[in-house]
Image 1 (tube, rainbow, N blue to C red):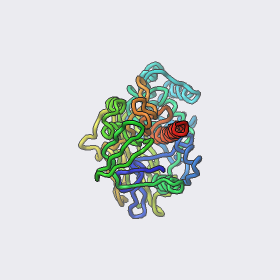
Image 2 (image 1 turned 180 degrees about the vertical axis):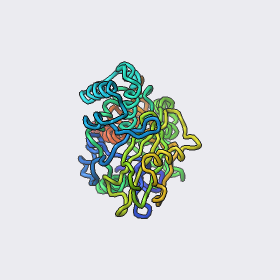
Image 3 (image 1 turned 60 degrees about the vertical axis):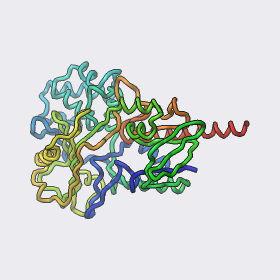
Image 4 (image 1 turned 90 degrees about the vertical axis):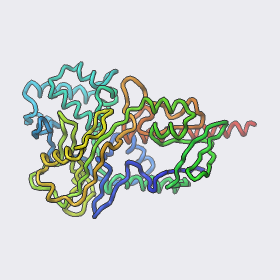
Length: 398
């Protein structure tokens, strides 16, 4: 038997979607990478989802408080006033290297330093890294990981019809069809490991015994749940969580002259009209996500939302007259741990706790954000199945 325990009343975590007045608001901007592990596993399991490739419309770069054409093609690179001629040549050179498989052993910041780029070109590459990996920490993040992520983003992304709750519901349905017992509103307080089984102690005092346990939690939550597992305490200490501020806007319509997309070059901002590519709003309406990628270790400032409103004023002036609803998220966790250049992420199997496995966006060798979570979840499930098979063989031999 397989049992799932979720402390919240609803499944999904950061993939939950709020439905208000016919609008679907994700918790900040979310995109499904067409070449990523999450889409691969959704397709393997036959989980339905709908949506369109992002992005259409006009794409802008924000540099020193002004808008410029974002160089996303040869044509836009030629036309943009973001770069001078020498800078356009430098950008074309380094972008070609990235698309052809450039990598590095150190940090992304070190890789950029080695390229000897003009400041605005370097800042533009850092902005692409932030956009692709939802992270702002070039001195900490692995160059290999972020360059792979930029290439993955270039394959394309989907904005999902109905928001990410649509795939959460599909996964839950598939799990129940496979016989999984899903328990929501049940908080596990402690995992006790010893002998050949683990014991889960619930908040109400009830207990459950498991031959194999997968902890799909952040590193700090996992370490608190199982304080006797030293490797989890180490991961909690070493993890560098990624945070963002987000302003999710439901508009009755887009104002005239508004741009659909903007990426901050010298400041870590992002704005995108997600409802252009997905069914997220009633007829004529619009769902816009504005975000700031916070530097690693930084918490939101007091004016966090005012900053995002100012970005919206620049990119789509007049939007305030059409606001229907909003969702404000300060310092939200985007990822529980970025892939560092100086330290590998943990494996799904815990060497100091046989029969206990971990999964999440901070675990395993593949991908970032949701792709890392999906890849590690599948690997953890397979490792757990192998562990259980081995235990069954031992019992048969006995």
